Image 1: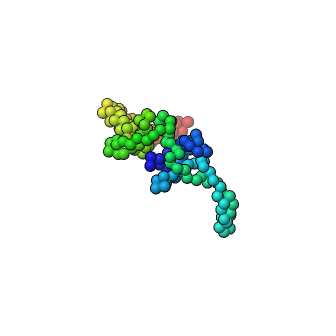
Image 2 (image 1 turned 90 degrees about the horizontal axis):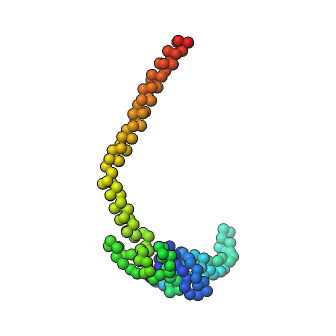
Image 3 (image 1 turned 45 degrees about the horizontal axis):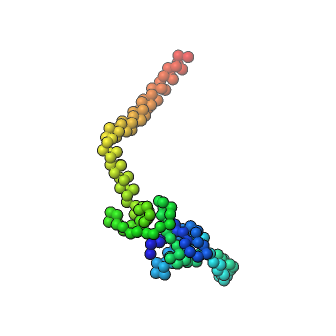
Length: 163
């Protein structure tokens, strides 16, 4: 089954046709999905003690997977799902734009960021020494402040004696 919990889908047939919703729960063995705010049914609940009163409760009912279509997060269109291996991991891809649908297994962006970081590190060794100097500079300022505090009371005492 190509649809998983957390995916955004569009209903393609039935009473709720055209609505976009998020998958709350998926039942792969039954080939059904539960969507947020779609196919709402009223269930009559029996009272179960003092803390659980009875009444009518609206809740979403499962829909067959064949009645929904996955929406690509990149292009925003309803699409079929292609399966591919990227860096040894099986991922779902959009057949229209080719983008990776699985957010957890999106290695293309991660590798691009790692490559940029490694380039920056190799190009900027001088920048690291500058940061080290700036880190030692506050320590020097603190040392000079301590020295001035020690000498400051002595100057105050001499000023009071002169007055």
